[in-house]
Picture: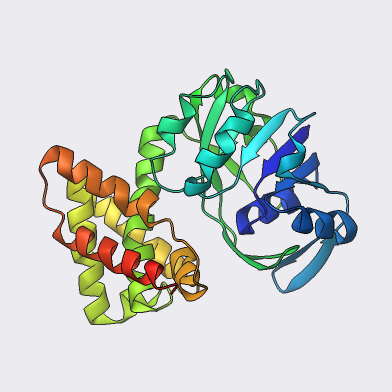
Length: 294
């Protein structure tokens, strides 16, 4: 299958690397410079302490236009989507969106493609430079249909070593489950400046962790709260040595995904008349750090 991937960040590079094992991949990057480096040198994938150079991947600047693909994967952060939508609005091929949060769902209604999927990525990835990505944690990519039949997506039926896909029946539940994980771990690690595991091992941070989960799960009306809490905790522990993407964004003076994550939850709290004291405080703290460039 001919797969196009938009986004040259950690997730875009990771997907391009693994999917190129069985498919023809074209990676569309924001800058022509990054596309040129990848086209010339390939992508270096670091996984389990080993480094591999993958040279069969085509790379183009996004401004060159998207063509000749059978599946288009959007691996950019949610706040980049408004710039990209005009380029993909009329494209008819199936699309898979891999954004955190829930706000991107409103954008999908503008697209003409009859087949649109959403996914959540449970892998860990770190971009070292324009063409090097490290697979820091093996996980799974869960996919659900927003529009069209999920069975049409062959990726969920094939086996790619260390890079599995799984079907989810309901995109709303799938995204909310991931949103709770991101909303608890990312802002706390970003403000406290700790690796994920520090939220559990430090008793004071763990108390914050519990309180934030309680507030967020109430706002989002999460069912089976005990099970959901254990899931967030297990993610934290299984990625104990990871620095969250939001923490890395703060450390590097980049824009964060706080609006896509806590911004959506605050909107839900306002519409439902629910308390959001801790969520609101964390949102303001991250926005303050972001405005100072880290």
